[in-house]
Amino acid sequence: MKKNDNLNVLKFGYSPWKYPCNWFPNIANFFRNIKRAFHRVTKGYCSVDLFSMDYWLLNLIPEALKEYNKVNDGFPDSKFNSMEEWQAEVNKIIECFEEAEKHWKFSDAENKYEEEFSKLLEKKFSSSTLGGEKGNEVTFPPLTPEEEELEKNYYAEAERLHKYGDEKLKEGLDLLYKNFGDLWW
Image (tube, rainbow, N blue to C red):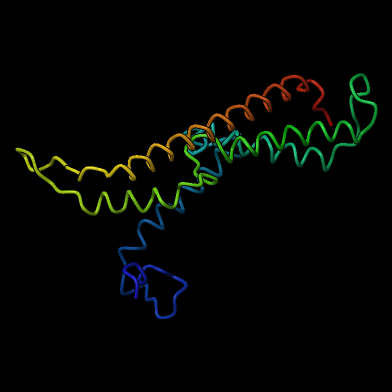
């Protein structure tokens, strides 16, 4: 049995009477979610969206454009010759934003060194010790040359993926800017 199995409400044998203190956070979250839903209806966003507006926009724009492609029945004939060309342009914007979201910031989705580096960090933190004058300084054992090479490779790959995400974001924003006035229904 895992450490947090008693918190799984879908697991057979869970008794809310046995753990009544677990009710209170759920009740508080319920009312917070109602407040957030109200703000999204009245303002179009809520405090959670503002906390990470970059992530929110990276998800909102492609989803809105996908819906736009479904319901749109016209195209800007001054720029495009057919509806298919216009939808291909909108799909290119969607693709750019989705790629940017996948690779931007701290995403390790495609970092080929992720698994090995995670194991290294786990090993590093499990063998750390507390010390210093106040007893609150953490010391780590020195890295071997192979581990230093792995760390260097991991961060280089993370930087490459981040740059790719930035390029896709810039390309998507440029396409969105170029076609912004044509996004009518």
